[in-house]
Amino acid sequence: MLPHRLQRLPEHAGPDNLRIFTAHSFRARLLGLALLADLPSGCALLIPACASVHTFGMRFPLDIAFLDPSGRVLRIERNVPRRRLVRCRGAAAVMEWRSA
Image (tube, rainbow, N blue to C red; front, side, top):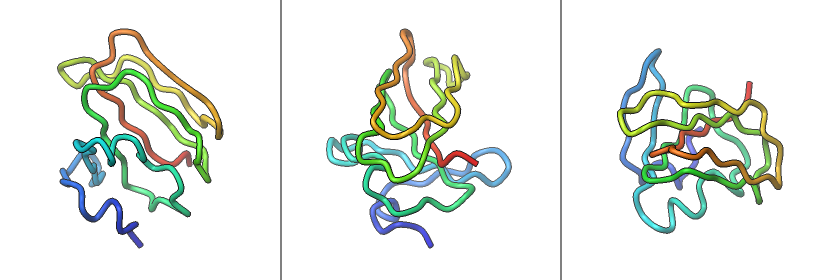
């Protein structure tokens, strides 16, 4: 079941039927995926104009992709645990999803 918080965000189709939700507002960007009990597989959160994320308040580990201005992947951090801060110089956006 899709968390209510994500249902209100704009959704785009990604590769392999990935559902990408975009956090544009200050609140959506600040909260990200924090405090959610779960995130269904096949869903990801895109945070534009962002080069760092935190995992404080997370209840599950994340995979995090840092993207350049054209959307290409600069770096992927896998299985990032709770209470971490991760950044990538030169990133224009961040995409995060539940680790497998």
